[in-house]
Amino acid sequence: MNEITFRRVRKDELEKCLDILYEAFKDYSIYHIIIPNSEANHGKFNRALLSCQLADSMANGIVMVAEREGEIISVIQLHSPEYKETTVFQYLFLGAFTVFRYGGIRKSLSFINMVNQCYSTNVEYAKNNPNCWDLECLAVKKKYQGQGIGSQVIQECIIPYVKKEGELLIFKT
Image (cartoon, helix red, strand yellow):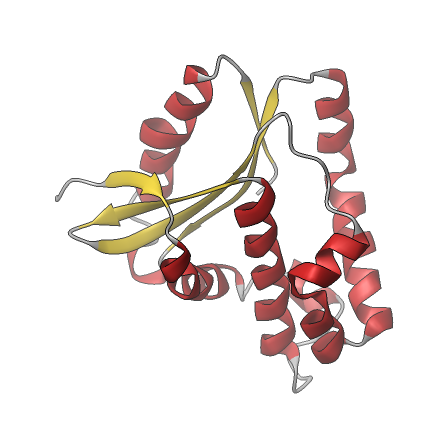
């Protein structure tokens, strides 16, 4: 097995990262609750959501990639203890208009509300433990899933990175 290396993402790689994120998460049930698969804009809505999340992590967090032989095989989004939750206004700047375009305002806001409720426990934990890093997202390229890449990324990249900072890590993926 070839060696995996980890590094910060470059801006010119964001579309590749978005492709990995979309393929990795397009079948997650949370993306089917608000807009069912049968609706024409389902895929575009999901991709727009993931694009906003990635843009937020690029602007306010840390986005890293795992590479093997020059190929990006995993995308990591981390939020440091200093991360502040993104406001609706900030999300608009990061591309939420596209989310609203494909999901409609009501369904898009319903999705955001649902996600906020899902993550509320982590948010509370982080408030009481201010040194927490948050693993916002870990995606492995579809053809590499089931090969232990995600575990390797956690063990060899994420945990050492957070430990170097002397902090705790919470998962919400």
